[in-house]
Length: 99
Image 1 (tube, helix red, strand yellow):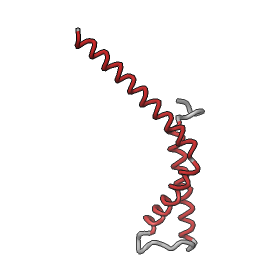
Image 2 (tube, one colour; image 1 turned 90 degrees about the vertical axis):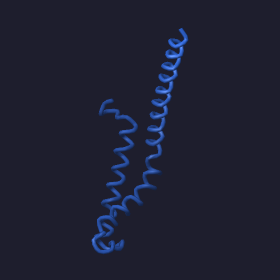
Image 3 (cartoon, helix red, strand yellow; image 1 turned 90 degrees about the horizontal axis):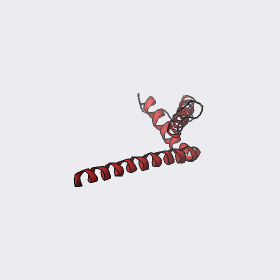
Image 4 (cartoon, one colour; image 1 turned 120 degrees about the horizontal axis):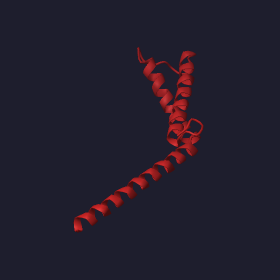
């Protein structure tokens, strides 16, 4: 893994965090200028976090589709490799037990 071409999982995670942070700043600005109501009492921070989470989820679902598919393909390949190793290990154990 190099920094020039990071793994799809790392790239997706970094982009997901970036989308969330952008939505967090955006929602904080909206609350600060009164375009969105402030939370009750001392819950302003929690309100801004929840608003950012609700905004970032559909945005990342749409905007990061290609990165999510690449990450999924990488994970499928790793699981297939692990299953192949497991099957090879089972066949070696079965061969040793039958002798």
